[in-house]
Image (cartoon, rainbow, N blue to C red; front, side):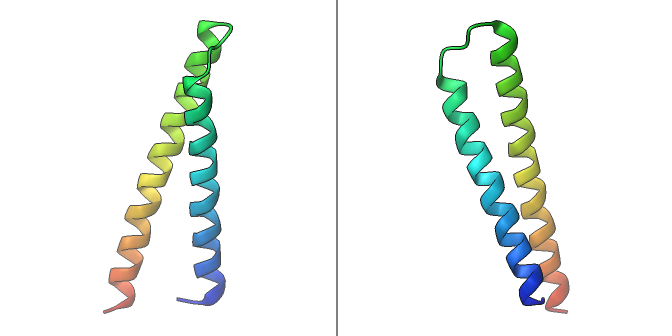
Length: 67
């Protein structure tokens, strides 16, 4: 795995973590409308799913690189 690819994966992981943290904060804040709350929760769920998929991809790539 090249250094550039490692840094891209690290940067993506950090960006997802930051977005997830911010959305978790917003999810606990009082929303003015139900729609705002739903938008935050939908975005949080999307980020969590993206992070899970990234972990699957990274794990698969590491397994493939050891072969």
